[in-house]
Length: 296
Image 1 (cartoon, rainbow, N blue to C red):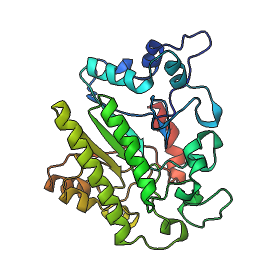
Image 2 (cartoon, rainbow, N blue to C red):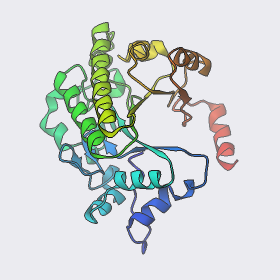
Image 3 (cartoon, helix red, strand yellow):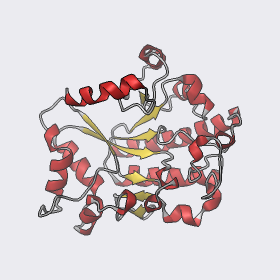
Image 4 (cartoon, one colour):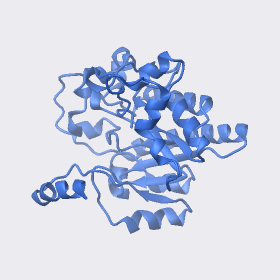
C-alpha cells in the first residue's frame, strides 16, 4: 500500500522480478481479478512524474524497492499495471486522500508541503485537541489544496494505463479545519468535496472516451452515512450524482451492519465491498483472540 516496497534481502537483486515475487506473483491463477495499488503519500510517490516528487526512501528513511526500480528505468506502478494486465487483472491506482503519517515522521514530509504550509491544517507544534493532532493534513477547504490533488490524479490517469483510481478517504479521515477544533463540518464543506469529486468524474470520463473503454472511480469511505457526512463526505449525494462506480466501506473501525451500505449502493446500481482490515479499536477480548486468528 505504498509502504511495502522494501528492498530485497541481502544478496537478492533489486529487479522487477524480485519485486513481483514479493508482492503479486502468487496471485497468478487465484480468484483475484483486481489489484488496488498505492505508490506513496501526498506528492511523494514511487511512480515517475513531473507533477509529484519521486520518493527515494520509505517511512523513517528505510530503503525501498521503488527508487531502485526507477534507477533502472522502470517504476513500481508501471510494473504492477503490466503484471495485472498480462494476467487479466484490473489495476487501480489508489491515492491516500490525506495521509498524515508525516505529522510524526519527517521522512514522509514532502517538499511541496514544506513549500506550501498555508495549505495544511497547521504547523508542527500546534496543539490540536481534535483530529488526532494531525497538523500536517491537507486542508481541503482551500481551493489550492483541491487543485493540487486534482493535478496529481490527472497526471496518473492520463499517463498510466490503469483501469481506474481509488480515492482512499480513510487515510486519513480529516479534511476540513473544523475537525481539528471540534467544530461542526458544514454543508458548504460537503459541497466543496462533492464538486471536487465531480471534477474528477469529468476528467475520468474524458480519459475513458479517449481510450475507448470506461475509466472507473472507487472510493473507500466510512461505512456510516452520518459519520461520512460529518467529516465532509456526502456519500448519498455522490451516488445520486453518479460520481462513483465502486464503494468500499469500512477500515480501521466499523459502525453499522454491512446491509446498510449495500442497500444504499444497490439503489444506485453501484457495487459495495467490505474493507476487512485490522481494527484500531481494541479491547481485552480482541487482544486475547488476535494471536489465534493469526495462527489460523
